[in-house]
Amino acid sequence: MDQCGGSYTPEQRRKFFISGPQWAGNYEGHALFHAPTREAIGFEDVIRELGAMGVGHWTTHDSDVIATDDLLTDAQWETVAAINKSLAEHDVKCSMVTCETFHHAVWAGSPAAEAPEVRAYGKTRLENTVDIGHELGAEFAVYWPGTLGYMVQGGIDETETLRWFADGLNAACERDIEVAAKKGRPTLKHCLEAKPFEPQAQIILPTSDAMMAFISSGVLTHPEMVGLNPEYLHELMWGGATRAVLARALLAGKLWHFDINDGYPLKHDVDLGVGLVNPLDWLNVLVLLRTHGYDGPFNLDFKPPRTTSNFGVWKVSFPGAVDRFITLWEIAGEVSEDPVLKEAGEALRAGGTAVGGDLSAVVDANKELLTLHELISHRLFQILIGQHRGRTFSV
Ligand code: 3MF
Ligand code: MG
Ligand code: MG
Image 1 (cartoon, protein in one colour):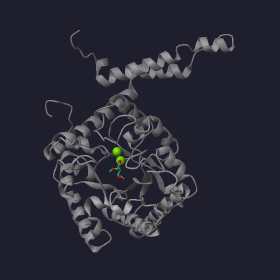
Image 2 (spheres, protein in one colour):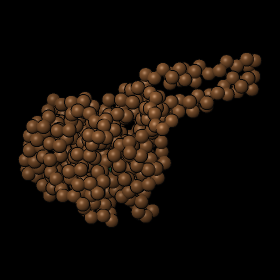
Image 3 (cartoon, protein in one colour):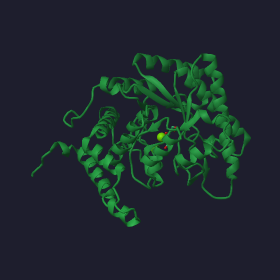
């Protein structure tokens, strides 16, 4: 890692709002067809490692740290107290909590299943996660509904499912208002996370855009408390351009939280480390976010590879992801200041000067418009790889 170069100090890393999920640090390498390859570790280990490398924030599902049977019992508060102790000891803050509503058998029909008992339990779990979030000092709650969908068609009434999903979110927001007032804390920012498929064949709210339509559909009692947590790869999975998705969320004022990782379009949720597959696209995403002043968290929702040991997770996988992100963020800053890009951008916006005023004159005067687009892309590539500074190879 030393010889790879480009690493940052823990102090430098701490300047960024980067968060490390418990479930990424604790990922044991299991998958549908794959047995675990690593031993489980606890929140003490994850928080200690994050603190030591300079990741100042930690995120968790309720069931990552508290066994499902212990949730909603006194035992959960002992764990929450122990977590707060670990966080203080390693100077790490809990920025986000999320309710696991997909792994346990009770969620087979989703948290918005037909059975009233399942939905009642779902509501209680969501409210409880809000309680835990306030106790841990979190600012955000994230909802990835996981199984909100179907394997076969026609078995559910989608409008009913959507209303039931809204009921759960409404319960979480109501509880939040109550607890925040009691504790003198701001309410949480509730962020919906979309994924187009997986684990189900079809998902009712497959994309961030679908989530935005849902937020403004009238079924939420507090739509102003609910925004988005897009995940970079989840938008590629349906063939979307993540940067355009983020732009739409920015316009709506709903880009509150961002899961960062990498992978391939129209494939599964491989959750590779940020920048390993699409560094140029990632640069462009960060230019957009810098330009528009995004100041929310960058949550490292990736999976260290199955072939990596617990040692490798903390010595290579996590610091590698953090440092690639910071480098891309820094390059995005350079892009924003670059004189060539500035000049090209201004020329684009100015357009040509048509002489005559008929349509063909406008076409003639603006012939080089897309030439400038390509020139801008070329310059971005050169900046990304450092060629604009004159790197030399064999020529
Ligand atoms: C699934 C995900 C999830 C969510 C998490 C937070 C396990 O593809 O990305 O990570 O980010 O559940 O709600
Ligand atoms: Mg995610
Ligand atoms: Mg994912």
